[in-house]
Amino acid sequence: MSLPKQLRDTFTPKEISFLAEQEPIMILPRYSMHGTTLISAKLPNLRALHRESIPIWLALILKRQDKCNIVIPDWLQLSYLQQKYEDEIQNPNKFSKLPWHWITISKLLLDSAVDDFMDPVYEIRSLIQDLREVRLLKARRGLKELNEVYLQLDGLSLIEINEVRPFVLKVMNQLRKLKESSKIGEQEMYGDDTEIGGDTVMSQDVDDDYAGVQINDSVGINHGSNSAGRSGAGNSYLNDSHTRVQGDSMEDDDSDSDDDIYRKD
Amino acid sequence: MSYYDIDDIIADGQVRYGLGYLNGQPGEPIKDNVKMELPLWLAQILATQLIDPSQSSQEEAQPILKLIEPEFFSKQFLNFIKSNSYKTNLSPYLFYYKLVCKWANMYNDTELVDLISKMLVDRASEINDLSFKLNDQFTGNNQEFLNGLDGFEKALFKTSHASFKDLKNWLRNSANSASS
Image (cartoon, rainbow over all chains, first blue to last red; front, side, top):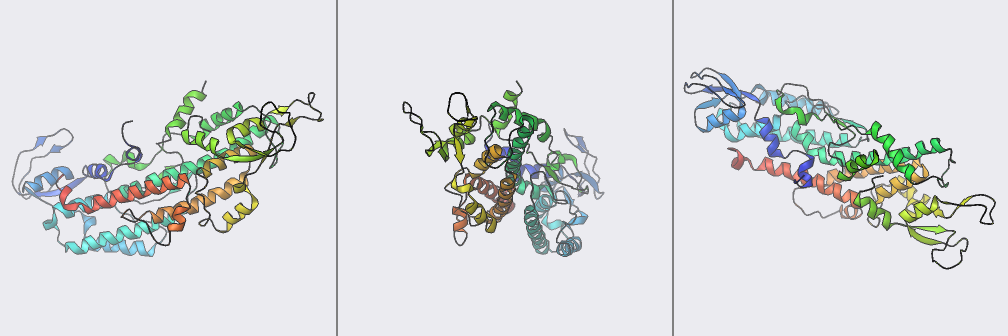
């Protein structure tokens, strides 16, 4: 791939912003106009002062052209966010349920639709900051429990997952390699009846190392990692966001995949 | 392990084990019980070859070499790790974790692997915490820890720091990219 390595591992925040813009949002058009069919969305016939639901990117364009007002979604109200903040503080082991793209959408709206907010904007901004900090702390604490097989962080948003993803994948990969190395030894041990012990030397051909790895390949590596981020494009923000990261990354070291090709001979 | 992994090959070539039983100079007769250093890949192969008992004067098949454990797997070092995983200085051994993999592979040492895994998780979470700063300068009390990281941990630190930095910069650049 011609991308630099860090871009291969995760999304950039701009890409996530792009994904978030697909979400639907309510607008209040100021004028009536005919709808058109675009490639990925359909702009319905707009009547003045009747609410319509359109994707955010379209709403932002119309807003910039002064043709509509954006209706702030329910979860971006001061009272709701304050409630969520209380929840976060009271449950130090769980994340409160926030929409999948809450950070991105709030940033987009705070930047371009400031006049559409009913509550004071600076309060909402500071609340969002606080929420993010608390969740970050919780995520860090959760990382201490890493093992090489699976990590469960329910309720994080896509951006927050994206933040920790490269780090977590590297550590999990390394843990997996460590665990596998001692397991390979055990398998060969049982296969060849060699002595067991701390300072015994294996009396086998070096080729058997590779055979051992092949056995593990079919068991350990499944490249269908179901990190929800990759399939998140169409999700409405009210869905559950259970996040499970399986032990093997979708990005493996390039050399490892080369191994598979050669070993299967 | 991965045959074509460059880091692996370098790791193989680097570490010297103290060894016995064979003097490596060609042309000289073989003396017993001499210690020498060999790179890991050579040591691994030689250690798994047995000497044919009929040719030598020993009674049973014996390996050509016996591997003596290097100092960073000694009991002392491991105890130090157990007591304080942050303070151990892994920077002289550039590829510590890879070496643990290879050693554990040869000796089926699950205990070692468990200990090292735990150490990795502890150090990794510490690395994650430290990489959160926005600017690129890291000074202060944690300098000692940061200097004591091995190659893998340094790469870990860099990726973690890069991803945090990206996100923060994006969050800050609000007004400019709003219209994009």
